[in-house]
Image (cartoon, rainbow, N blue to C red; front, side, top):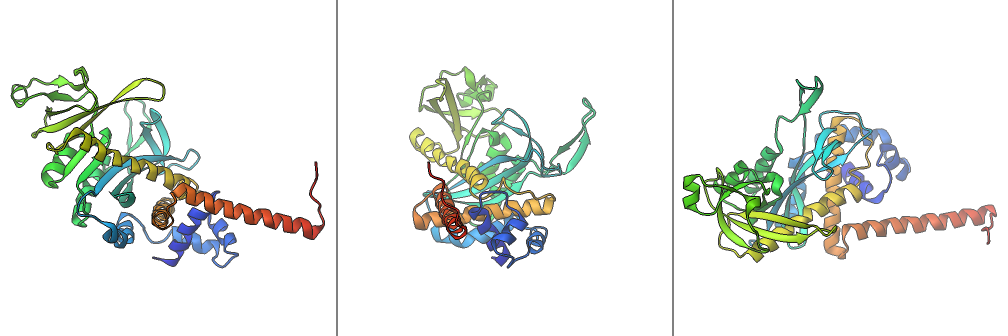
Length: 360
C-alpha cells in the first residue's frame, strides 16, 4: 500500500472532526506537509479495482467453499453545503422519501461468517446534463444505472473467482433483468426482495394463460414458501413471506424471491439476514472512517477520499478479527485514549502555570 494512503486512512479512523490536509499535517507535527496530502488526494485515481487488490490477500485467507454471500446495496452521504458536481448532486433517498444532495455509493461486499469486506464499489456519477422540459431546469442523470452497476459487480466477482453461494439485495435491485442475469448468465443463486405491487402467477398454467395477480392481493402467512412465476420472468422462483411488527406497532411484510427452489423458507430467510451487514458497513464508513467528514472540493479528491474511507473500514474489519471488538468499540477505545492524554496534558499545564483547580 502507498505509504501516504496508509497514513491518511489511519488518520480517518483516529480523528473525530473534519479530515483535512492541514489537520493531518498538524497531527504529524509537520513531518508531512499539508500540500503533500492535498497532492495525494488530487493525484492517482483510486477506485474499485484498487480496493480488490487491497482486500484480495485477506479474502483468499478467509474464503470458504460454502456459506459465502455477495451483498449489494447503495447509500447516500449527504453533502448539503458542498458545491454540486457530477458525484455531489441530487439523489432520491428512499429512507427520507425525497431528494437529497450528496454522494450516492453502490457497494458490493462478500461475507464469510462474521467478516464482511468490500470487493467493489462505485459512486453514482451523474455525468449527463439535460433540461427538464416540464420545469425548464437543468438536471443530471447517470450514463450508467445502479442496476448496471449491480450486474457489473457480480460479473467482476465471478471473474475474480470470489467464492459465494448467493447474491443478496433488497427490492430496489429486484428487476427482471437483474434476476435473469444472475440466474442465466452467472448461473448463481439469488435471494432478493421484491415490491408488493409485482404481478405473479401461482402456477405455470396460469402463467401460460396470462393470469397474473398483484402480490399484495394474496393472504400471506408468516414463513410461507410457494413456487410462483413473476410476470415476464421465464423461470419459476420460490416466494417467501415474512411478517413482522414495526416499532410503531404497525405490521410489515417482507417478500423475498429466490431461484433456490429446494431450500426451506427458514433457511432462505436465515441466509437473507446476512444482508444486514451492508447496513452496518454503511454506518461504519460514515461514522468510524470519516466518509462524511471531508471538505474536499473537486471530483478527484472526493473520489480518493471515498476510497481511503473504504480502506479505513477494511482496517477496522481486520482489527475486529484480532481484538474481538466491533468497529464502534474500537473507535471509542481510540477516542477515550486520546481524551485521557488531553486531560493529563491539561492537568500538566495547570500545574506548570500555577493555575489551581476551581473548587466548589
